[in-house]
Amino acid sequence: MTEKQSIRIVGVLITDRKKAAVKVQETLTRYGCSIKTRLGLHEATDDLCSPNGLILLELTGPAGDMDSLEKALNAIDGVHVRTMQFD
Image (cartoon, helix red, strand yellow):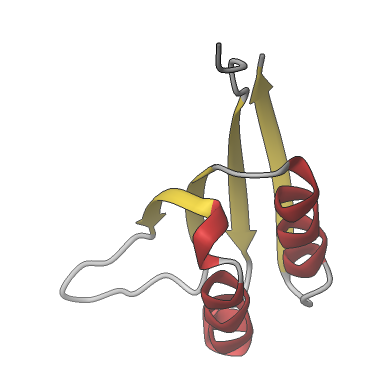
């Protein structure tokens, strides 16, 4: 019988996309096997491209890997991480 895995949703707020985008993408790539779903949101029109962005992640795999991803993202200047966990 398989153990039910909890669901972890992570919100990643990037307050300066131009400054942090490369480091965030490198981190997401490094932990890509822990990311089941990724959704990026930011305001963009013909006249405006917001300097802020929000990424929503659904994580999977060992809890230690998920924790490491969150810690790595939080270490980037201008990046704030919040987590929801459903058991």
